[in-house]
Amino acid sequence: MFNICLLTIGKVKESYLAKGVEEYLKRLRPYAKIELQELKPESFSKGTKEKAKKIEGERLKSFLEKKPDEEIIVLDERGKQYTSLELAQKLDQTKKKIIFVIGGSLGLDQEILNKYPKFSLSNLTFTHEMARLLLLEQIYRSVTIVNGKEYHY
Image (cartoon, rainbow, N blue to C red; front, side):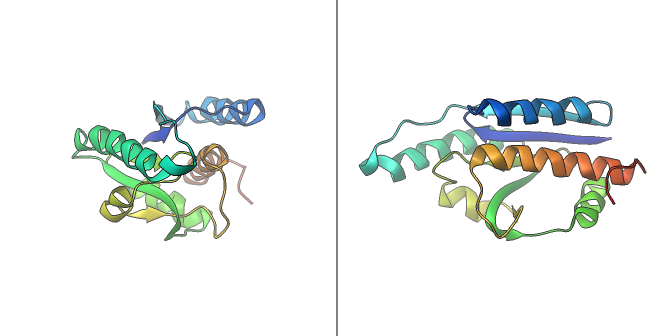
């Protein structure tokens, strides 16, 4: 059984994406222990973006420092890409709890990006809300591959 945490900055505000997130969480629950940890986003203006990203980075760092035995992977467009089959194999082989980190609307602080392995959903850039839904779908796809369910063709 997969043991996964999605650590994110902020909540999903778009109702159509929130419905998708809830749908995949529901689908995953019989096959995986999955949790969402949503940290507070920092308010920013045009001139305070870097400061806000740094504060969000400190919130992430504070959370992650309490999890030294877990595998931490940050989502970043420059990260390693996997096929769905490769991701399923990676998740199946990992015996530790996996924490996937998704930044907020400003992305992730450089300190977080430098410290942890990076995973990319695509060469394309998605909103942080879409990334959460896409990641949950790929985790669900991985579960179905590992369990021999008809979903991935």
